Amino acid sequence: MVRLPVATLILLPLLAHTAAAFWNPFSSELPCASCDSPIVIKPHGAVSGNITFKVDLDSNGCMQNTLTCRANDSDSPAIIEFNHGSGGILQGLDEISVTLLCNKDSTWTAIAHEQALDVISLSCDSA
Image (cartoon, rainbow, N blue to C red; front, side, top):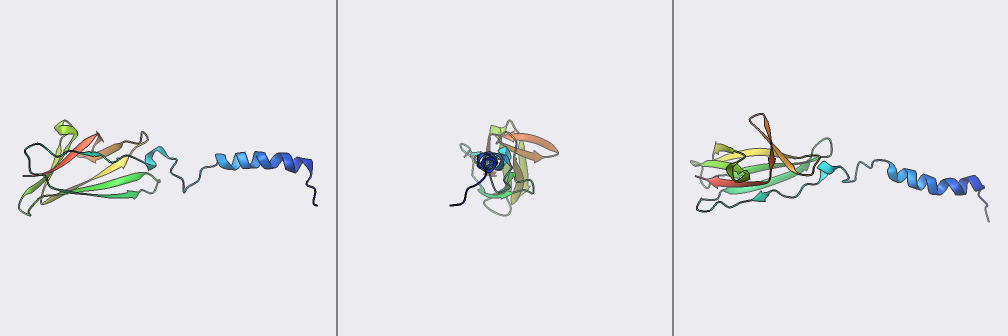
């Protein structure tokens, strides 16, 4: 039987506790690494477009979501409306895309027209 010095026996539990305190790059402990899906609203009386999401992690380990809204036909505008219209709209012919970034509060932020917008809900419409 091998006997370890007493100092080693005391340090082993301390090392285990200390190792757990180091940041693990493969963990999702960053607040921006996890956001719930934004609420997609189907507008009453409007024609809904086709919406797709592409979720990735950025170079900082934060979640980002590229949202693309496609119109029902190539000659129609695609419209993304934020927060029941109070957050404004983005519009493009046939399709429009916007990147949503998961922030430190684990909520989504959209950057459009050089402004940041907290996203609570959104809709994809086709006119």
